[in-house]
Image (cartoon, rainbow over all chains, first blue to last red; front, side):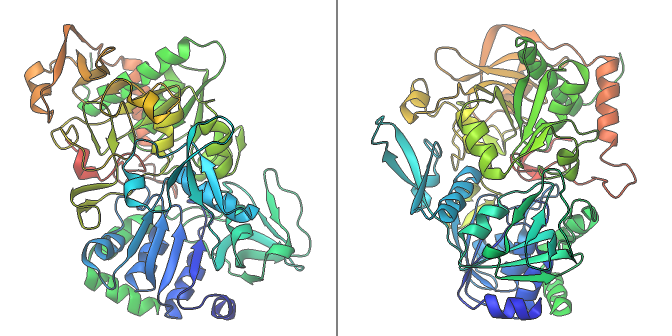
Length: 259
Length: 283
């Protein structure tokens, strides 16, 4: 995995690590921290602990997101410190709603320049986010929101398994991973295991090897989030992060150990 | 009658409001659920009064029936017990945006008299706020597109404010006609349930009006917990206290949060639509 991250993630890249509460690619994110990448534009619908860690480590110059919190616990303190106090480096933000972010990935995966949705009308988001514009439907005259496609330089997701040809299978809450991978210029998938054959699983999706640049085996690579069918979410770790993230010294110590 | 807390009556009354609406529909009644207080009330409603309530979470879990309270909108229990699991683009586009959802059930960090909701920033300016909240999540489009919206929030001058620092999700904008002007197809907020009572938008002015108080709560208390001059309905009513059955089911649900299992959930109830604990906390 170390080689895969080194090959695919470069300073200044736009990088999406997706996984909607489930299958969050923590191991890959921490590898980015170890490789001391800087100036990244981080993209993610729900930046949670892994982005708090990347932001606190100074990897990010910009964050594109729609909900930034510690689910079930509270705030992301490294994110708040970066936004409020420019620590350790200033963080530019580009803020959307979930519907807007999801549609931006869909446009990116579809090779379209923008997506259209019923969204944002009457809110204060368009005044602060330049990537939200209102447009008029050429057929009905309705006012709708337009948001530009997201095409990350690299998307990283975690999945349950891949076969030896590099086809990837994931199931449970599948989030926006397929769209994020298809929208990206390069992609890395970390997996719990590599198997000879991908036996069918109800509700599973398959990402063909055609759209996956590299697969890296990383058992437990989604911890402390969960991998459906493999392990449960470590809720205590999410609670424990609150105290670490809240305090710069505690975080710095965590960072030293992680690196 | 057994003792109950302010949070318990709030949750029970919210569950009844949801169940009452579901009861008017013969077919399944679709509810898009925010995490935290809305999720607790929606799951209580499913277990007590409203068997035809179909719960949808923004993680793409449709028709889910968790046997414990989910910790987050992406909790694995939601996928395990769902009728089907769809992608995030699908849940927002095909299900929410299309207008198929009967009711959106939201929390709030702050709201104003027209039930506009802020979950983005408090104080300072947008670039350097005093408090940075998680942001929009699914709320703006839930508030825009569901046929109606129910809000559950603890009432205080920190949550019920005269002017929002940021409008994340639209209730009635600045008053009558604004939803139509913005092209919002859903009907907007119908009721706000708090730990003090129940408020409903005036049918003419759209301004939130106190219509019921929980037993033992006074109008003065409700006014003191509101950051604007609170309108009070003539013939102000009183809510019915939780029944033994409702309390038993609610407490059993709450107990699943602290069950000594790997899935235990003892963190404060904060989520995409509820904001930090300290903003709503009265307990």
